[in-house]
Amino acid sequence: MRRAAESGGLVAAVAYCKGVKVADIDVEAAGDWAKQPDHVVWIGLYEPDVALLERVRQQFALHPLAVEDAAKAHQFPKLEEFDDSLFIVARTAQMVDGRIVFGETHLFIGEGYVVSVRHGPSRSYSEVRERCEARAHRLSEGEDFIVYAILDFIVDNYAPVLDSINEQVEEIEDHVLTTTMGPAEIEQLYMLRRDLLRLRNAVMPLADVCRRLERTDIVFIDPVMRPHFRDIRDHLRRAEERIDTLRETLAFAFEASLMNAQMQQTNISRRLAAWAAILAVPTAIAGIYGMNFEHMPELKWAYGYYVILAFTFSICAFLYWRFRRAGWL
Image 1 (tube, rainbow, N blue to C red):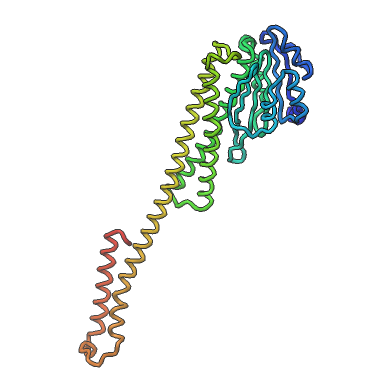
Image 2: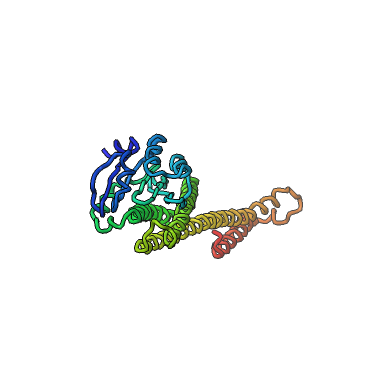
């Protein structure tokens, strides 16, 4: 049922009074509800079309440039301040078939309203709405608490993504220690590093957004809520540290794989060189006696054949022992 509702663009439009849900409302009535004292309107949209965004824009007099950005949905995390509203862009992330897929969330914040616009793969914010409605005393703090709840939900969902990536990295580390990485493993390593870089590009700007939300000159953010955004920034900093650690681990794994491959090639070269040296002895002796000289005294000796064989075997055995002792065989 949720997916059916989301497919139409409008997920929910609810009016709250002092943290208590008053009614599900129509978009066309949202502006009037938001103007009432102690009321907050929270509208949730999922991949809305231009017509629906225009209807929402007219209700809250949203800035046209911000609405245009929300329609395109290919934005970097940012915070833009307008005369009577804020516009926030955040990137969402989740694991699908072992790869990180990214979505976007755009937030319009103004006096008495919050509009959340989701694009791409991401978890529904109905879970956030339910948690907020269950804590009416916190929801009564207004639109800044709703913004905090959404951003906190987005950041919390980075943790399972990093946990999944960490498991894959550990498997790669174990594989590197036992055998040389093949093309498939190298491709997986490269894709993980690229996904982590994209995740880092989503985390770092969002930390800057939270830092700006702590500022005292942003009208819509109550001073009581500013420490909450500092807490989100701390979570983002820890996520950034984990990302950097995982990227370094993957780089070390790749280097270790290269070193392991080089060591194997060196060992093979040593083995080939050792056997070539051993085989050179009978080859050289056979070559000497294959030249058919007339004056070779040992050819007339009754034990010459056996002595040459014994001498050849002794030299080969000695070389084999030396190479074996040196670790070449």
